[in-house]
Image (cartoon, rainbow, N blue to C red; front, side, top):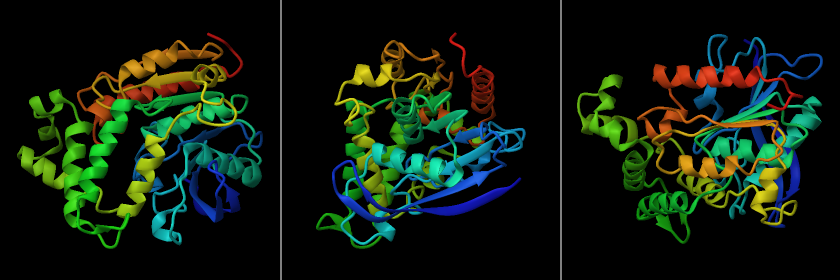
Length: 342
C-alpha cells in the first residue's frame, strides 16, 4: 500500500474569528493512489485526541476503506499535536473552529491535489461533525457523507459532558493561569474515569462486555483502557479540541448566519447517519431531527449501530460485530450512484 505523510503549509490564515493564525500547518497522510480522473477520493478527518495513526486500522483491502480502490486522505484536526496545536505553536493559541479546519482541508485537496470531487467524507465523533460541515459547506464537491456517532452541532447535553471532562482535567494543580504548565498526571486519570462513564453504555458494564477484550475485572479495564488513554496527548491540546467540539455547529458561519435549517437544506450528498444506538452524548434523536431537514440530499438514511458499546461502537477496534455492521453500511453507501436521488 502506498502511503505518504506530509505537512501542508497554509501560510498566514484569517480564522473565522478574524484572528490571523501565522504559518498554519495541516498534517495529513494519504493511502493508495489518486486516479487519473481524481474521482476516487475518500476524506477521513480525525476525531477527538486522535492522530492519523489511530485510524489506520480501518484502511485495508479487506477493511472498511480499501486503499487499492480509493485514495484516502486523513487530515489531522487542529489541536491534535501534529497539525497546528498549542503544543507546537507559540502561545496564545487562538480559537479555532470546524469551519476553519474545513477551509484549510479544502485548500489542501484543491491546491495540492487538484481534487474537485469527494467520493466520500467519512468521520466518527468529531470526525463525523467535520463530515457534516463538509457536506453543508461544499455540497457540489461531496458525493457521499457518512456521519458515524456525530451530529451537525454540539447538543446541550454533549456540551455538559465536555464541561465535566474539562473540570476533571483542569482541577489538576498543573493548570495555572489558564493553561497547563506541566503534565497533569492526576488530571489525565480523572478525565479518563469521567470519559469511561460516558463513552460506554449501561448495558456494556451491566453485561461485563469488557471481558470479551480479555480484562479480568472492571478495575482492570478502567486502569488499562482509561487511566492513561489521554496521557499520550498534551493537555493544552485536549482543551483546544474540546473548544472546537463545544462550538461545533454547521450553521454558525457567514454562509448560513445561524440558520440551522438552511445549513442542512444545503446538503446535496447521499447521507448516511450512523449513530450508536446506546451512544450517550451523540444521541440518536439529534440525528433523527437532522434527517428530516436534509430536504435536498440525494438520499438520507438513519441506520443506528445496534451495539452496547456506546460511543465506541463507531470506532470498533477489536469489535468484529460492530465492524461488520459499519463495513456493510459503508459498502452500500459507496455503491450509491453520485447523480441519483433515491
